[in-house]
Image 1 (cartoon, rainbow, N blue to C red):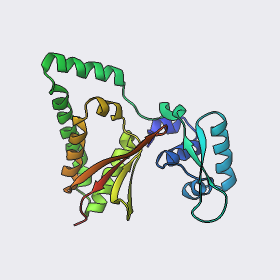
Image 2: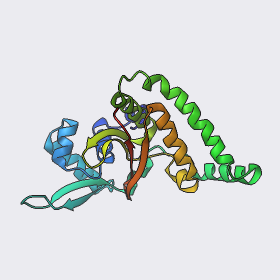
Image 3: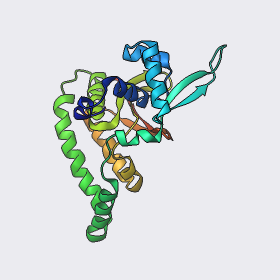
Image 4: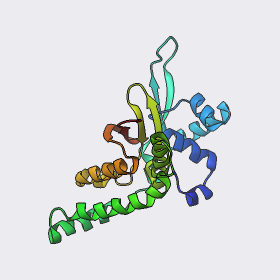
Length: 217
């Protein structure tokens, strides 16, 4: 989710369109029009303009039945600057300095404190959920507001899960992978359920990460 200040200073229809595509692996004009409750031609014009100036690209996939391949719109790397991202270089320098001065596990200890505090703050909202589905929905909403572009989803292949299309911590996770498990444990504690993290794919528009919720009991 884009922050409110950014929305106030931008065209809401364009941001809503980019956000919808971000939370997907590509969308057709008809699907965008339906989700955003806009006219087909209005969405098409926005997409064509964004493609022309380099923020979108087209991708064609074969249809399951007859007919021409379906044309989908995806984000390009030019959109990266739109999404929340910490000063990764500075944070990496600080964390590597901590390792040198205080030992190899010091970055993980700092992030343990971060996730403990985050869990404490988020529990106030999540504990109001009366079921696991409601709690997971509340968690996805909080993570969406934190810039993870999250949503809950269910299908036969992956079951009930939280999908995320951006994570401001992603580059730090690559350098300090043990932090990932701290985030997963925080989610498990908040939901009272087993959570399995799976990075499904990564491309120019970002990485899709699935958090499978272990049980609906």
